[in-house]
Length: 232
Ligand code: DC
Image (cartoon, rainbow, N blue to C red; front, side, top):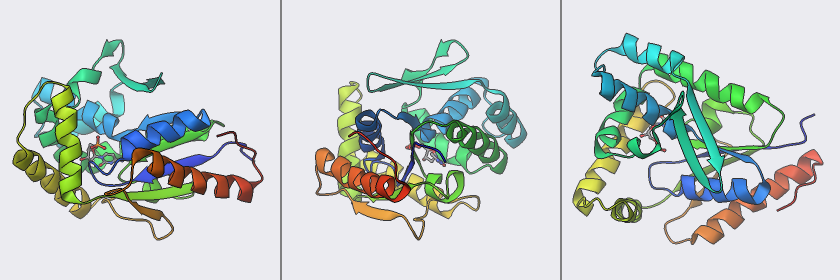
């Protein structure tokens, strides 16, 4: 039996997944995987090659791209081979196109396969995304579904943009989030949906620290159930 847990976290854009998943991983000394970064990396490559309308080419990119995620000192670095593309993944262009890319079956199959492989090694892992609790790790030890109001989610994204020195109106951010929510939850292949056995946490009025503690409570319950000792 594995002595480490798999913690799966899903939720819409801006629900607090990345921040809380990273902190949970740090507290547990686990590996953190931002699965959205993989869809963003494929989108970035497709934009660069002008291949966004070509499903076959997109599937080939998803299968062949050497996407590497490194989580060091609380920061994720994304590389394609040796090229660091971290700063290219959160641009407005990638934000606008990533949902279209991630609805393509071939792209999803390729990335889900890579994600499942990441979970096979006997190590603790915290992975977040849209289909982690339902498709990638339906048997995860801990399954969390985060939500938050649209206004709160838009405000959080605005702060992220501001930090990067980009000015985008709150209205534009809201529209982008709503359009992505719609595409992500209505696509035919593994749409964003709450797994029946996932614990739902509304983060609208909850501090990051509280979110993290609520998730860690679930981790403790799962560890006790499996008879695993964890240090938090
Ligand atoms: O978490 P994020 O906002 O960085 O994700 C970017 C997009 O990638 C999101 O709009 C939908 C897609 N995605 C997905 O379809 N499945 C995942 N497991 C993670 C992300």
